[in-house]
Image (cartoon, rainbow, N blue to C red; front, side, top):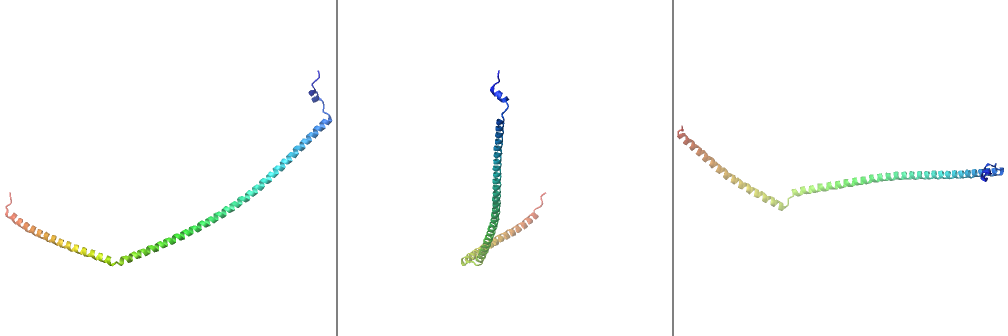
Length: 174
């Protein structure tokens, strides 16, 4: 039996034209792969450059942002100091004004106390007269009470003496 055709071709030596064509094909494949790799390397290089460019840009933007934040912070600190100083001055003015108003009011009250009006003087005089009358009445009442007490004390003294005399006359009971 004869071997199958595909087997005979596999066992048969390759003709030189086929080997050259296959070698040419391998070189072409290598050239295509090499060109692909160079293209990929160029793409990678472009991406690296783009990445570095973006990183430089971002660093610049970050530096600008940092500078702006620092500047804004300094402005705000200055603004807070300025507002604090204004509030302190305003509060001091208010306290001074209130102190002056209070001193003026106290002086006014003292002056008002010193200078009584005619009506106030009449009221005070009326109260003094009534107090004087009440004191006189109390004095009179105390005198009456004192006189009554004196009479009572005198009577008690007389009664005691009489009792002592009566007790002296009575023989002691045994």
